[in-house]
Length: 229
Image (cartoon, rainbow, N blue to C red):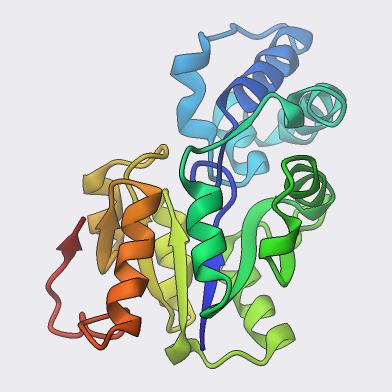
C-alpha cells in the first residue's frame, strides 16, 4: 500500500477566517497596520513564525506569534471548515493506503482540528511542528515522519496546496501532488515541482483509483510531464 501524507491548511480544511483573524488580532496588539483578511491569505501554509518575521521583522516575530496564539488557541482554530468532498475522498482512500497528516502547524492545534471535524478515523497519525518551531519546515517534518513510520519514500506521496509542501517532499525523495482549491497557484505548485495538479478533492481520489486499476499512477510521472485533473 502507498503512504499518503496530507497537508492540513488549504488541503483538508479551509482555515482562512481563523488564521487571518488571529493575525489581525496580533498585529493590532503590536500597534501595526492591520491588512484585510484577503491580503493575509499568503500566510496560510508557511510556518507562522516565518510569516510574522516577514510582516514585523525578526525582532518582533516571537511576540507576534505569542499574540496570534492567544486568539488562535481558543477561537481561531475552530473558524475553519472541511473542504467539500474531502471526507468522501479520505473514506475511499483509507482501505487502499496509509494516510497521515503532515502539517507545519503545531501538532497541539492540528490534533484538535482533526478531532473537532471528526477526521481522526481516516488517519494513522498526525505529524506537526512543536510550539518552539521544531519541524515547522515541511522537509524536516517529512524526514521525521518517514523515520517514525518506516516508510520508503518511493512508496509515499505528499499532497498539499503550497510550494513548501512540494519542496519538502522533493527534499525527501517523495513525489508531490498539488491541489488547486487551496491557497497556492498553479504557477507556484508547478514551479516547486509538483508531478500532478488536482482541481478538486475528487480528483485526488481519481488519481489513486487509476493507480489501483493498473493505469498510470503516482510513480508514472518520471518523464517530467505533469498531469492536470
